[in-house]
Amino acid sequence: MPSTAYDHPGPLAPDELLPQAGARSTPPATLPPAWADAVAAVIAERRHLDGALLPILHGVQDALGHVPADAVPMIAKAVNRSRAEVHGVITYYHHFRQTPARAHVLQVCRAESCRTMGGEALLAQAEALGREHGCTVEPIYCLGLCAQSPAVLLDDRPQARVTPAKLARLMASLKEAT
Image 1 (cartoon, one colour):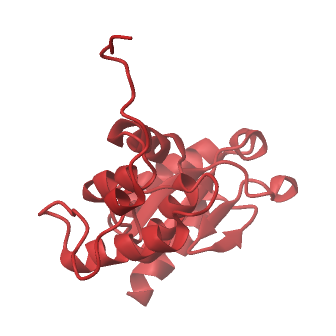
Image 2: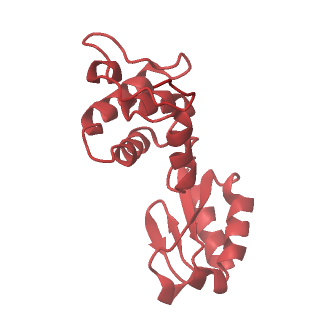
Image 3: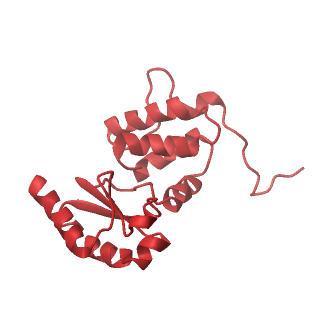
């Protein structure tokens, strides 16, 4: 049967997925060696899991604080997916960062309850002040604090019933702490 342009080459042999002993995997030249080692360690630890892509992405983000674009080829090769597929997963889930976060991370809930209680205005306020206060501002979808909305998560600490004045105080405290 003649092959078509759509034929998949089939799975890679195990020795094609992981670096050989004493050899580095195939990190792109722009990925710092320490980051390449961290990514390779996460891949080695999690590639055997069912649906290994998400555990690997979580591991890389936990290790580096984000999933660098230059790590995508290594991850794609390890899970036998295209770079586009891996990039699609990274961009689909808001949890994954493609650039390092600043010193502080403020996540503003955008679920229905928080939105109706002023969450959108808080997000706009936070985005306007974020850089000045060394803070990465991100949307998040439901913190489970609907009865106390609007809510934010500041450096993994939940803050409920946030008003514009309370948000300004929280962000000012970040600037004072750094």
